[in-house]
Length: 104
Image (tube, one colour):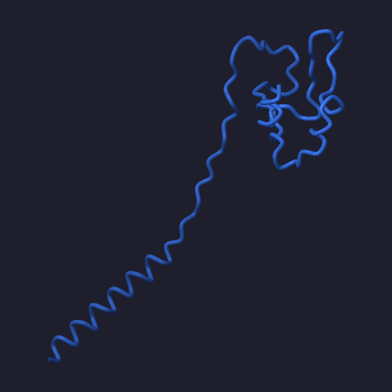
């Protein structure tokens, strides 16, 4: 138990039990040092797993797997303007290069 306390595996709101006790008890009152532990060292809360049950379907058979809802893929519109500008810049550079080479 001491190792679990030092590892942060037990928090003040954990339930603990030992031989001789009739019921489980909150760890906070049993181990007052847990209340002094900064929240940065306490384990993060676990988020519940997402449900794949269909909403408003009370008669759904949960013994069979259900596919996750399909996600829409939205195509991003790419602008052609940068390509046109780049093409024109290349043409201008070629013309300038040809003019300079003919002049020499």
